[in-house]
Image (cartoon, rainbow, N blue to C red; front, side):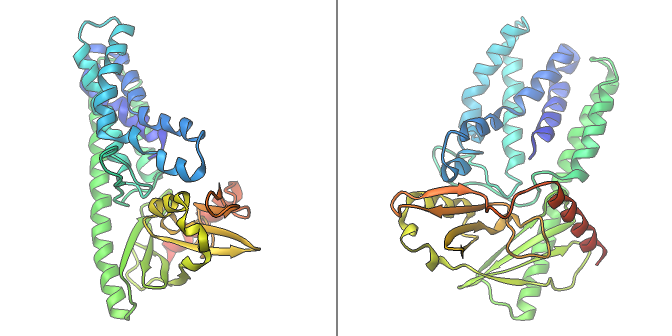
Length: 334
């Protein structure tokens, strides 16, 4: 999830666990601890795009990392706030960090909670990285809680409300996905559309419009569906084009990209340049089937290729977000 969501949930956790005893210090350190795993984003800038996508939400989001860093951070916090109860701060940091990782498992990106023992990246594909219908209510509620004294009953109740709403919304998103998966399975079988597997994932900013990617032996049927619309999506077919990788296919860096995408990718040759597109995130243009958030240019030596992030004609900017929002409104109205 986005950093603001983690800060809010971390702050609410701090208030509920230690607010009555430690006041604003609990809220502050809960917010900080709740965002600790995402500091890996700064270090990922030091690595190649192929390595950085796997480093982000890797070991820093693992259970082992939480068990290692929590005693260290808890001890440091206790020293800074001059508290004799180190264990309470260890407990807060452990809960906040593990909660962060658990929430990130709901996104499509993938979270390495079992690293370094397993390369499995857990992704339930039930929450977009930013969901305004979720973020705005918890932001307003937590902001309102700050108007009350740091040890008041009202602040504690509002913090509990933030956590209760959060986990209820997570449960709702999982239920929506289960219902949608059954609907998609029935639709594909009814229409005779062949598939080996498929994924469903909510689009950015909303839980109302979902991306559907159904893989067959040659490529993918790719479309969008509103949770309010039971009609068959207008699928567009995208060929996988694995053959375009040529000798690049043996490169460890390219294999990292393939692992990151979980096999849901297409390859294209644009003006003599090779691009690998991650299909799991969709794009900001719902009317196009060739605009992807994650697109990697592969060039140079086949044994050690240069890999750069983002297609040059697919920059994310304000105009694209405006067009995307208009597309969302149109989809909801269908």
